[in-house]
Amino acid sequence: HGRALSAAAWRGLLASSGLEIKHQEIMPKEMYFNAWVKTMSVPAPQVAELMAMLERASPCFKAFIQPTPKDGDTVFMLRELVLISRKP
Image (cartoon, rainbow, N blue to C red; front, side, top):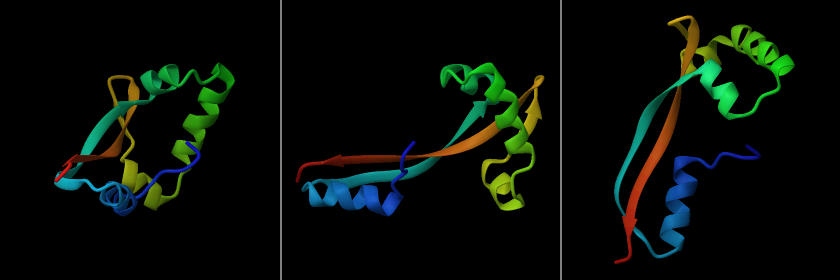
C-alpha cells in the first residue's frame, strides 16, 4: 500500500462527509503467510525474502504482528478498523 490512514484520519474523513459514526472497533485478523503471499501474487524469489524480513524484524514490529509458527506455516495478526456510520 502507498499509505495507510490512521483511525483518526478515517473518522475525520467520515465526519467531513457529514456522516455520524455509530460504531467503531479494531478487529484482529489472523493471516497465514503462505496464503497471503499467494493472494498478493508475490513472485517465488521474493517469498523467501519476505519471510527473512519477517524473521529479522524489530522486536517492536514482531510484538505488533505476532508472527507464530502454526500448521507448518507462519501466522501473523493484522488489525482492521471497522467503522459503521450513517447520515444524520
